[in-house]
Image 1: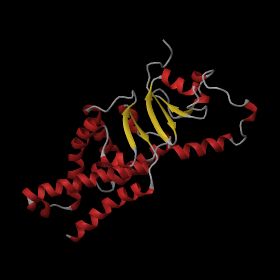
Image 2: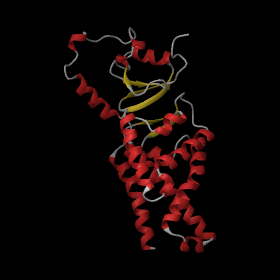
Image 3: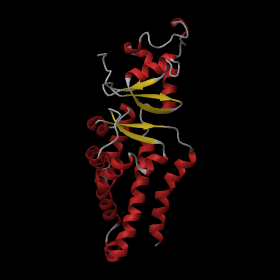
Image 4: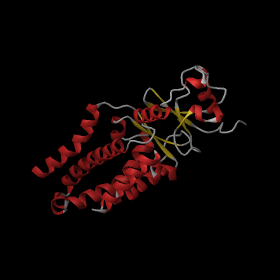
Length: 249
């Protein structure tokens, strides 16, 4: 059996992180010229995304299009530009925007539902308490949504996908563990000051390692694609609009 043959692989093409594919299929993509030597690839035993030509596993598989001596002298700079353009090091801003959009939408439905049956509860509760209550309740709701649809609305709008490192859809237990981890380590369960500390460390952890602590521990991977400015503005302004509307009511 070929090493890593049973692993699921992910790759970047046309500014989108794609996969999973098996090793045999991945090699065929290289052999057919669909993917190049500069393509970033990743699988679960790798610490970070790497160019295919840096891995001995693909030696002889990738067609040589030019002699080694013709490699540009500014190779390192080109590499950094490719990484910046295709997001292999993570997109914390996109992930946070997607989560706040989902939380805002869920809070809207929750407040509307509770207001119908117990308006007194909403009127007598502080905004911080309602936010923390929504955050904790959303843990279960998000796990259900991910296990059924494989994505949330916010992630779908911002063109991100969640998979296991084996390329399988997220099951309920995995989704539940991840949601708890995200809300604890990434958001501090909404507790003032603590949540900003969690934001700070999780942001730089994702920028440095390309994947969050919870994804690494639980065995999940977030794939990113290009997203236009209109979608970013919509997802960004939606929570703000709800907050402004809440202060005016």
